[in-house]
Length: 307
Image (tube, rainbow, N blue to C red):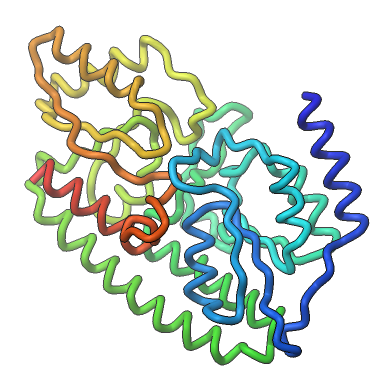
């Protein structure tokens, strides 16, 4: 509580001062701060040489549980534009964004999607809420890229044509990735198209590419799982003869391992099919450290274990 109060006071002070904005027309780059690696990567692709991108959440970081530091607040304050996912993915940072938007563009890339495009979780505390993991439907994430393109062009009209060209090239690669994912998942036998993970981050992926998804925890990793959740998922694995489950880079393996052990006690062997990237990308400098590479890695890992 004291940390939250301290950050709130820091945000109020910094928002009142405001960072010194650079002028792109005078040769300065737009300073962008993005919350997740997926957003930072998209901004880098669209902005190219005209932007300087700072990401807050690196590999292995769970955005649901992330707590902003004083250093993060300064990075946000120093930015000309802030991009975040929205749909409560960065739930603990909501108050910070509200303060920052008084002095600069603060853009939730998911906020431009239509209600019918979103998946809801009626069981969530406080009533129905939307699943924030929109990047796993490549088509939906293309809409986020378009939001980034338009925001950069509005903030820096002198380079609008370059942002448009960069976005077109990136969107073409995304179209190809979307087609690849559909083709590869369709190659898995229909009765084996069941993806079991530690938390329910792959709902959009399942809907877009035709695979059933089961998660031990709910959409938000802040929700606790109990023995009933473990036993229900264990029974599901046994009854459906599922041979592989998947761990996630940003979620502890302890939960899914308890399910595997429970199935083993009932005489059913389940293996870990591989590690998927869900709420965070891989290390910088690797294929999985890019959005395109992360999604392709997930698709290939799933297909290899389930086909």
